[in-house]
Amino acid sequence: MNRHELILLISVTAVLGPSAACKKASENPPPPSPPPAPALRGTSTITSGGGGTHTVNAVVPDVYSCTQKDLETRMNTNLVVPPGNKLVPEFVDIFKYGTEGEQLVEYAVGCAIATGVEYDAGGTTHPYPPAGVATGLLKTTQGWTQPSGLSTQQSAREDLHTCIASRLNPTGQKVDIWLEGTNVSGKESACDAPITLPDGGVIPPNGPCVPEALWLTDITSDRLTIHVWPSDEVLASCTQLPLDTVMKRRVCGSAPGACNLEPHKTLSTDCIPDPKDAHFMACKLPGATSERSAITTRLSCSAFCSLYPGCNLPTICTGGAIKPCPTPTFKTVPCIP
Image 1 (tube, rainbow, N blue to C red):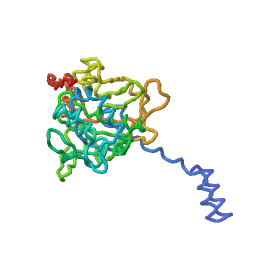
Image 2 (image 1 turned 180 degrees about the vertical axis):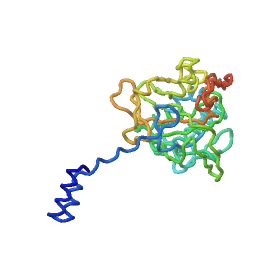
Image 3 (image 1 turned 90 degrees about the horizontal axis):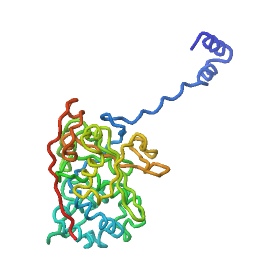
Image 4 (image 1 turned 90 degrees about the vertical axis):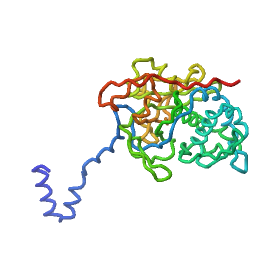
């Protein structure tokens, strides 16, 4: 308050009383403070602030590439045999891939629904979820247990393919991964925070959090395409190889021509804080006029080399030192006619 404002306030108080003076003084309140920006971890342009859902990834990409069309068909029908929770027998074409096929079905069901199902494989009835595995990772896919499945919910099928694709691992190793996004259920933890297990146990943080990528799936009348925008950390760590090679190895395994992946280096121009929830991200697909809610993946440092063999560890994991990941050992599974 300057000298002239102070004189005016004293004059108003003297003539009209203290209440009028208070009213006069409050006529021009200070402008509100801007809302805090979403927090950043690492140096990535990926925002975060709402926490993520911890799960694991270990599905061999070859199996998903070989069965992608069959999975899309299954999503258009009821997941279970009504009125119970027994998985429909049509998944037999995926179960013929043995353990890897069973794991793909487990991951698909775990992404989609929170309730348990049972399925028969190898002459044994398996309850799902297995102990300690997160379920119901998505908010949008609960309708898979309805008579028509997700046949009228294209965006839900796209979310489900995105969830599955983000959980593929070319080495077949089981590592921790965190999913975040407006359409992701549960915001109970961040990947640089302790993990609380279903049995009450706690896994301490394993180094810094590594933002990995943003993911979207686009389904058209003749094609299913998985779009991925790798983070600054992934791009900086994998300069030895072309981006297409790095990301298609991560998602497509030994069948890079079959899984319809499109990697993009344009995260900073294609993606923004999601208008539906600015803690998360939304990206614009090529040719689109608006953004769609994306799924963000984050990794612990110990998981990075499993997904990106042949790259370097991110410098946020090494204190700035250059440390190459071990020589890649890929797990391959041939398609079964």
